[in-house]
Length: 399
View 1: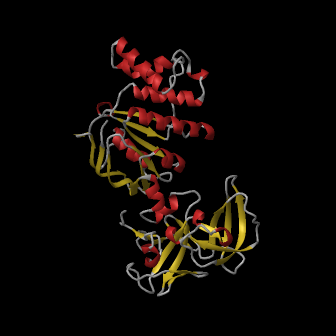
View 2 (view 1 turned 90 degrees about the vertical axis):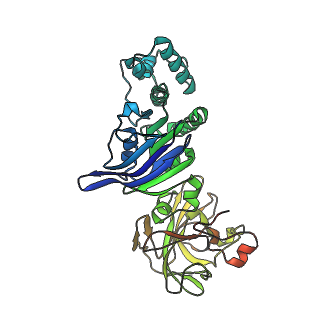
View 3 (view 1 turned 30 degrees about the vertical axis):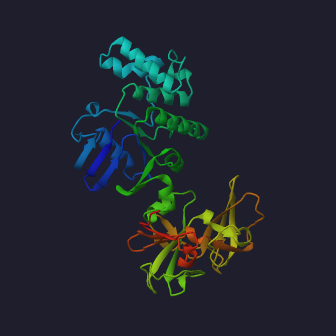
């Protein structure tokens, strides 16, 4: 095992900055996932760690060694790629042992490592098979075993499940978690799939436009996003955003109000904020009895319904106009003055073009600065309610 440290790592390609002043420390034994949209710099960041790409600026450490200028073979790392790339003319044993044979390891040592790796990834009895005789998941396990026999300090995995079907991806996510628990080694994983990032990781590093937006445990990124981008990117479907003006009574949007005492929050009357609330924190008034901190009811009309099996996504129009509009562009998504997305149980009796009343969960309302995109606070429960047991939380608050 080894920790991985990036200090001011930058990678430029002529006029494009793929990685921009990246600072990060990954501890021994962590499973850290780089997640972000396509082209955000997550794979380039991994390639600098692997030595496949030399950073323009900055230093990279694996353990106590600076490895910035070392070739990949001297860094104590092993990689698993999206393209499995097994040798089709070699059987499983030969594919797994190929790197060891190149390095002239003794036959007994090669056999020991191959058998141990095959046991870890559950390939016992398959060492004589050819790649074309195996399923996609089995071939991916061969690629992982080929990395395991290196006995590296750090595993680097670049979207290794991207080419698998949905059911197999779920299965392989479970296998990778078991593998991490068994090896207790450092794994850095790259994906654009939020489900992979949220379910497997000790921490996730959210990256956008080459910059690290937030690195934290998955639920912290979900419940306390550092900025608008993280709030809009983490979660599926994404967070609702609405522009609001602070008043002495609370928050005033174009179509509804939210009672809120801004005193002590650093906000003043006339300030503009972006209000964020997730679809699962929007409730029909008649089903919101268990929500302790409710807003006043908001009049809305149902627009489009999307049945998903275990839930229904309901698009709500809160304005009086017929067409919804999206007119507040933000980096993490779009804010809407007249539309909310709500998630309800699949057995809810609801239909399009129906007048409804909804409430929001105050404890899950987020406020963001529209100028800096930074989070201002998470939860707007009044102090009186907070004193009774559910504390309001702002950025930087701790338990």
